[in-house]
Each structure stands twice: as C-alpha cells, then as structure tokens.
Length: 166
Image 1 (cartoon, rainbow, N blue to C red):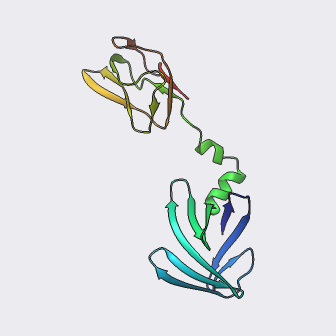
Image 2 (tube, rainbow, N blue to C red):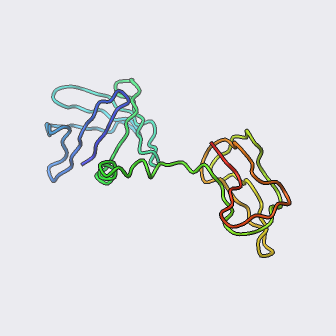
Image 3 (cartoon, rainbow, N blue to C red):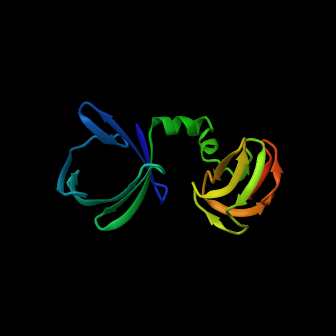
C-alpha cells in the first residue's frame, strides 16, 4: 500500500492487487489512456481528467503533476516509509550532519571553504595530510559554513571538530 499526501494535506491510500488498484478503498473503473510521453487522459466514475507528469524526484519521493492544468505536488510513502515513520525512525534518517570531524590524525594542508560560504553535498572543504597522503574531506550535505575550528598548518587528532555547518 502506498500513502500519497498532497501539499494541502489530502491523504490517499493506493493499493495494488490482481484486479488493478484502488484509491481510498474505491476500486471503480479506471480508464487511463496515454496521449503522449508524459500526458495521460483518465476517466474515473464518469469524470474526465488530463494528467501531465512533470517531474519525479525519487530521492525525496515526490511527484510533480498537472491535473486539468493545475500543478500538484505529491509525497509518496511505500510500506517501508510508513513503518519507519510509525517507529519514529524517519526523522533519524533525515538528520542533517552539521560537523566535519577529522577521520584520522594529521596535518591540515589547506582550507578550501570559508565562513559564511554556501556549500553543496560533495564540495571539497579541507585537505588533510595523513601518513604522507593528501586526503580531501568533502561535505556530506548542503549547508553554510558557520565556523572553521582549524587553519592551514594545524595538527589534528582523530574525531577533532574541524568545521561547523548550519
């Protein structure tokens, strides 16, 4: 079963079975015709709809559509997402990492970011020399550099806080 929520807070439960699918327990007669790539004509309970699929964001589990030329954003949860939410584990999965710590003892060679800088996931932040090798430490998420706790030339220990982000 899938749970689909609109931005307005409307909730729809979609179940698939051998005969097809149902929405909020109503199986009814669905007639879905593909007009072209992302455009569909839908008939349900004598009502006609034109649906255009604009974007599917698999990472954030959202679908952007136009139904009868009206834009709609839907959040989709499968049974695993619903179980994690019931167990209170959904928030833990989205927890933002706001710190960069030294993965090993070493010497800070270069700082590649500055305070106040907006960063994206994967951006290089710092070069740490350890065991005669240069290691580029990267951002694990998007954010803004709040504070640099080290400067070039500093010796650091394992798990020492290097950069604070917000």
